[in-house]
Length: 120
Length: 107
Image (spheres, chains in turn yellow, cyan):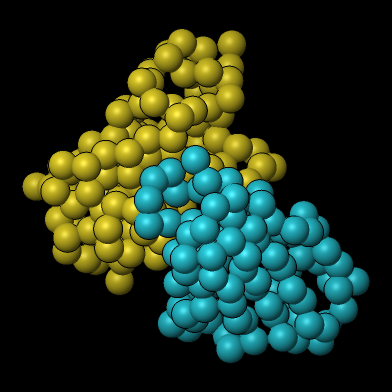
C-alpha cells in the first residue's frame, strides 16, 4: 500500500524559511517522480514543484521559482521541499503526491498534507 | 503556459441527475488530462486520467471525454457521496496546471 506522510509544517514569519519532508513507502521509490501540491485555505489546488525519480529533472511553478527547492533522498525514501523568503500567500496545506510515472504526469497517490502558515 | 478553465464553478443538482462539468485548455493538450474529486475535508482522489480512462475502483457512473482543448466529466446519476469539488489537471509538460474547481452540491 502506497503511503505518503508529510511533516515539517508550522508557523513562520514572512521572510522566514521552512523545510517540509515526505516519507514514502509501498512502492519502488527511485522509479517514480514526486511532487508538491498546495491548497490555500478555502481555495483550489496549485501545483508547486516536481522532481524525477533520478532527481535529475526538477520543475517549479513560477510563483515559487527561486524561493523553493525540491529534493529527494533515495536512500531514505524521502522527499523534501526547502522553502525560503516565505510570503503570506504561501500559507497553505502542502500535499506530497506521487506522479503516475514521469515528472510531468497525473497524480495517483496523495499524502494527508502538512499546514504552513506564514504570518507576522 | 497553458491555462485550464472549468465551468461552472459550482452547481446544485438532485440525486439521480446527470451532471456535466467542463474543462477547457487554452492550447491543445491531446488527451493529457486528469480529473480529481475532493470531498470536504479530504485528500484529492484521482478519478480519470488520459481524459477518459477510469482509475481502478472508481464507480462507473463517472466518465470523461474530450481531446485537444475541450473536456467533460460526467456523473451519470448523482449520488449523495458525490458531493465534492472536482478539479481537472493537464499534464505531459510542466507546469502541471489545475483548473479552478467545480463544487457539486445536492439540491
